[in-house]
Each structure stands twice: as C-alpha cells, then as structure tokens.
Length: 156
Image (cartoon, rainbow, N blue to C red; front, side):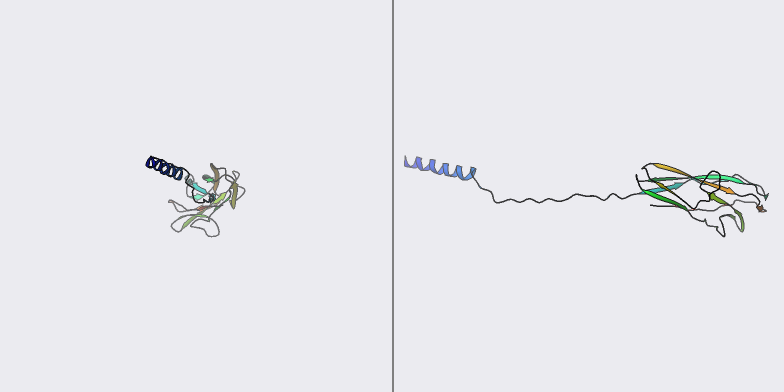
C-alpha cells in the first residue's frame, strides 16, 4: 500500500506543478501608425484651332482651348501659360519665317490677357477656358500652316 500511496502523492505533485505553473514577467509596447497625405494636381489641355483665314489684312479671329485641372480637395493652385515657342515681343504663330501675332485671354470678352489664374481643388475635374484672338489689322502675305506650342503649368 505504501507504493500506491507514494504513486498518488507523486501524481498529485506533478498535477499541481503542471497546472499551477507560474509564468515569467511580461511587458508591453505601443507604436504609432501614421501616413502623410500629399496634395496632388494634374492638368491637361485641348488644342486651340483658329478658323482658316485668307491672305491680306486680318480681322479679329477667335478660338478657345480648355484646360482641365484636377487637384486634391482644398488645394490652392495657380495656372500659368508660357509664352510659346515663337515668342518675340509677343506670342506668334509661325510658318517658316512668317508670323501671325495672337493673344491669350482669361475672359470671354478678351479684355484680360492671361497672366495666371488661381483656384482651389475640389477633388474633381475643373475646366478653365483660354480665349485666343488673332487681332485685326495684320498684313498676311504668305499662305501655309502656322503654329505655336504653349505650355500650361499648374503650381500647387
């Protein structure tokens, strides 16, 4: 019987040791999670095509282009137009060594030349019209296809 009693005591001791195991101390740590959301803007443009004109003295000839801007909501921006690749004391359309002067405006009455236009993004496309004019009174003697390239820049 002594053996049986010793076995029961040993089993009880083992059971208590296993179920009553004490763990070592523990610790915790925390960390922050963050992201920086940056503003973004994009700009695109349609071509400006003036109607055909004939040689001789010009009358006012008008055309438009649309600038489409998409900026993050609440982002202020400024749109500027470059002088064009044929600039010399003003914007010019070129065909070889022949030129036709033209102007770009920010209003439909063509009274305010485009310096820069400002706005605030709303997260959707916003359209801005560029109003072009070939002014009257120019003497055009050479036929051909005249062109220029203007760069629209958005700063935000």
